Length: 411
Image (cartoon, rainbow, N blue to C red; front, side, top):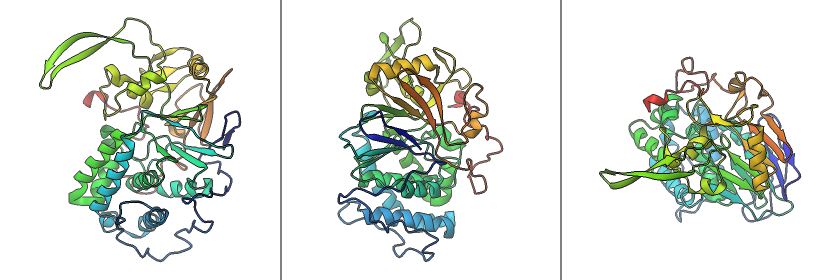
């Protein structure tokens, strides 16, 4: 656990290997009683509310979210994946996703988390990759979202793990219940290509059968609505992969297509430069997959870039997408926006083993850059990753090497 005491609030970064203290929830009407953290082991009997039903007034309550969590936890150990629709019907799935999208689509690309009191905390969570039980433990251990506790999830909810669908839906439920306390950002695995390679599509098809295509399509639509970054208390910037380029561009020509003239942007012939928060706010985040071009380069950078110990900003040639940025770029961004910390995610222990010059991820986080104005932290919140002892829904022996082998040319 890392504490950033320099910020106006107590901003806490929770990782998989450093449990947060057992904090008391806030006192508002959405707070949780002390005895709410019942586990499956404490109560092995099946939940009494299967299948789950949607609230008549369409408003989620704390009890509903807790029932969903308990039911998912129990069914993951007692119900075959092919029977999942008997737990959560497609109609309930549709209602939950629709409610979440109504909130997400009204959020900016970079959500600003302000209005925090002196006793507030913000828990930032890195990749969780379908590890449902770890997410449930993390929520219980860190203290549930409440009036004075914010949660920012930094993306990569699905793929590789066996319960990506349950994980994503549980977090959507918390978002709908507490939209101003829970923030879900988009990771690179919230895309059509990654989910078709790393198991999520296959997982959905297994769990919903003939209705799987509909459920998968709705999930992809929800991915499009996820914001790209957060700014916590004006001091902490988070995104899934990190920094991004400036898109100083000028219209070069107009082409005619089926939907009328389209402006093609031509990048100015200058060197790469760091992008601004204003440019980030104007980026088009609804593109699911590469090729990233024009204004779509910024979302591509946010979801595919990596830090480096070498100074400067350069194309990420190894991945074929995104950027590499050095400590000088981290310092420039921190100084420009008077920030203390940048928190990015994405790289687990497997990826860091192949990044010379950067620290490993055995503790769940690393401090990659320490500069005059603050730090760059990489945060990964999926313990014992990847958990191949359970069905991962893809041939992990063929695609075990993180995302470096993605065939972008086929997208």
